[in-house]
Image 1 (cartoon, rainbow, N blue to C red):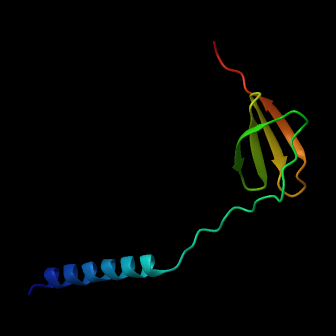
Image 2: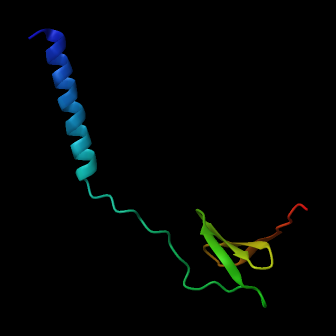
Image 3: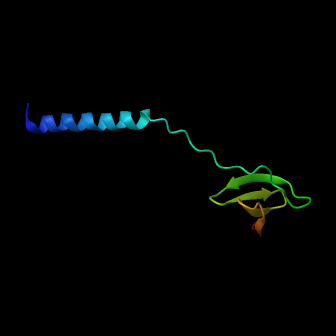
Length: 85
């Protein structure tokens, strides 16, 4: 057995060992913190919701994006979605 063969076998064993250790760890994804409730402006219906670091956004059926602060649940910004015709 040459030195190169021994080094390659050792390297392969290290890679397999690292993969086994990495995939055997229990890494359950941490769910995003959800607000207890979201109060939308009067007459607004939600179409989709997405979450960021310290904000969440609601896309409405009247083509607006409402951005709320996660901590205070206050409306921070309203963006009108315009489509090209």
